[in-house]
Length: 210
Image (cartoon, rainbow, N blue to C red; front, top):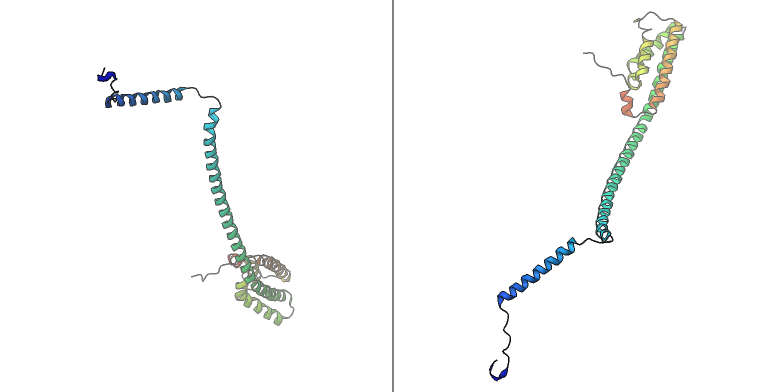
């Protein structure tokens, strides 16, 4: 005992002892964590872990679907704009074809009248003038407005006049005149629904032959 009968004051723990205590506490903590992880989870613990995952997946799916819908909507808008532009262009081209169609009808009527006069005129002078009118139209205005079927019918009728085939009598001339009239009627009906590009594509292409 210390002088005066008093117990000596407790000595502070050494540094080594403190470190050992800290390590012991850390080991105890690790053991508790391992034991907690190894412990079988109750059935109701699984949903609490799965729900956040499902929520995240649903959010991703919703975002992805939104992107897909946006892309489809953009494509739909582009397609509608293209269709509208195409319709407007076709309408403008058909408006352009209206005076062309009027010219076609007028020139067809002139050529058909000349062909009918050639086939049926009893006066040689009238018949000769009609033949001149036919060839003038054949070599001129008709080239601008005739479609392929009309061009073929004009060639067929003309072959009766220029001697390239057997001489045609009145009956044969009238038959070919009616074929020409039918081809002209069909041509005018078709031209009324064509754009200019479609009309040009349906014309016979003449070349110089060189």
